[in-house]
Length: 69
Image (cartoon, rainbow, N blue to C red):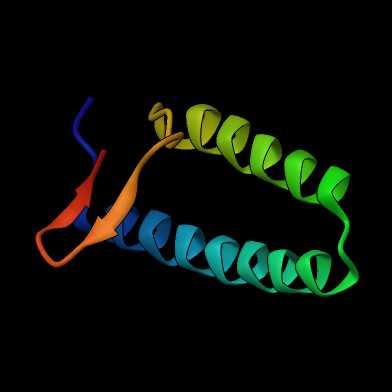
């Protein structure tokens, strides 16, 4: 099934918003020293990415050339 450019844009914007929320939650959990919460957040983000875009993001890093492991 082909995905329209508008749908791709919507998905990208949704993922961007989710990433910002996850980063804010991560900062808060780190500030409180909540390691259990950080672990749970990372797993939740990982599962969400697998479900949403079909990609396991564990180990991915953003580099100057894009995403890599």
